[in-house]
Length: 97
Image 1 (cartoon, helix red, strand yellow):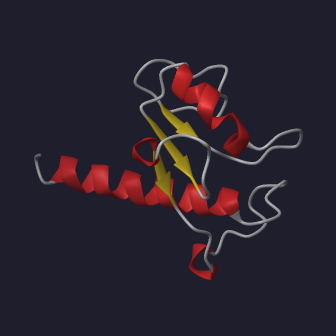
Image 2 (tube, helix red, strand yellow):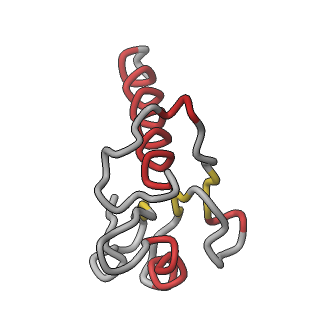
């Protein structure tokens, strides 16, 4: 799992997060070219739909302002989706799967 497209490796999950100088959504195609098998993003990212997991920002995310450069809530949406994914994986591990 990585949020820097320059550091992603084969089999990785790329998190499209907004930053001070650029938005990770803009770097999803290079992350896929570098070997990312999935992109967690809040809006279309220029890769085939099978490569990205859309998570639309919503008021339920409740994380507005958590990321300094998250003007549109996309970062909060990506983090909320990551938390949901982590809960699902933890539940599977607890269940013995």
